Length: 418
Image (cartoon, rainbow, N blue to C red; front, side):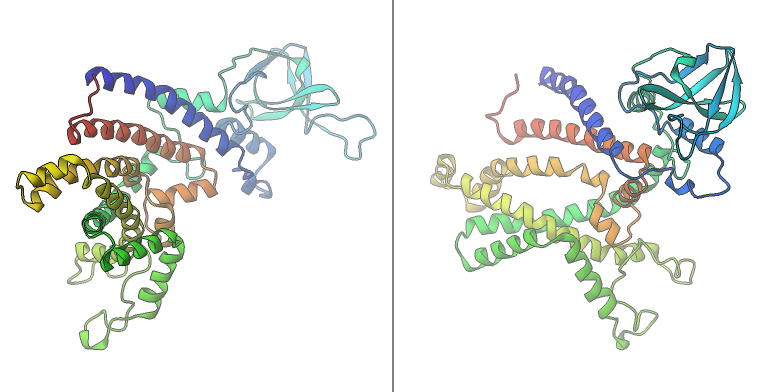
């Protein structure tokens, strides 16, 4: 078992590497430019934009850098233009914006090819001087790994998760801020899914083709076919916008929405006499947990029923019954353990969601968790936060799959990993 675990851990290293590379590439091809919000701002100068591009590395090559990140001027002096110089007769010819003396060290921000000639956008960091010049004017040292992806990768390996390019805060700090809210929601929702799915799945298998089996099966198909975001909006419309607490209950709740439709707590009631934070959290949990529990239970119930149907017709179950064991012992001590193996696999795949959050649920109900953070970061192309969440989820998926394999050996004595 130990050798198997070590081998699986070593195999996970290239898996995580290629996952991170693929996701980083998908993020980079996003049409959204994080600096687009500054383009029409009259207070942002070209030098300010160049400094932002250099600090964030937004114009650097994605994976392999063959143009260089730094260079040194090898002629006596060079003129810097506001854009690569086209041929004569252009309707908007470039203008000289600055001049740099020879031997000046500059950062290379961007590159472009105009009529067969390579131009580089350079930045003299200390004096904040920027502009375009032909690549022939520079001596450039090439480092293929001085690219956006490998800078991020080497920083992650050092424990530096980077900073948000929107909020300018630690990406890891932003993730850890949202993690408790997500764990709070997803743990209760997962418990609700299992409490609903496992008993119903076992009962449907034992009472196959009964009326209740047909009812539960139909409800499971409806739960799986129903768009989760539509169901969430329906819950808000019915239980938040339409239904209210009746007047005979009295108190502060009379006439107010039956259940909160957004947020994690009522900020208006905090600090008021008699306020109970725990009950307020539970009140806000009802709709999102219902949404997640119905959707997840429908899935788990189908797996549990199918697996249980297969197991209860096996020879060792008939042998257990022939030995005179009670039906409860046969079902829950012998059949259920083997029937739970497929469920363990599915559950292990879903466990990272406990940490990654539920994108639609947290967005619809404005739950301040990881799912909502991921959605906001995707809309703003916040590279550091997006990659931090992806790396955490990918690592957890690999880790929980390993735990699922180990759990198989305890659930089924026939499975060995020597």
